[in-house]
Length: 214
Image (cartoon, rainbow, N blue to C red):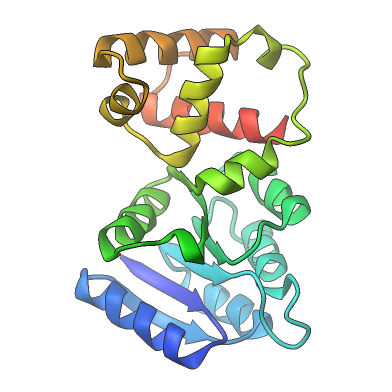
């Protein structure tokens, strides 16, 4: 897996590089600013970009804005955002096109290497990896318009867990139900969101994006 990394803090950047390489990822470029991020993505066309939100010179949202620009130039580019804060406006814009893998992790919530690498692989594979706190904040202004209003409270719980990247088995364990019950909830969600038959992984991503973009 070929990775472009954008992180301005030297020690953290080196630590992420070593972690990725320990799990057979190739870091083809590691940069510390948004301009170089765009250049590196255009040059290397990586399998995934791992991007810190706040980069020089203003340390506001340069990383996320550079990722958005890169995705417009390379549609479907998988992007995993790392941040200490949730930038709602840009996060929603990143989710808006509905193509390619998307992840948004809060740095303080990443507790072990397995959790991080799992998120990298899932996003690179076209899936989602959303921090629960990010999901919660993106839902604060959540619309109740159709078709999302047709979802039951339990289906909304299931969809929130899907946004975090949970498998059917993980959803069943979190909600203390059988895996079959979780699968039925997911099937109902697909139906209510009018997602046509396709691969389950693709429909999961579309369902999550519909939920978070509402």
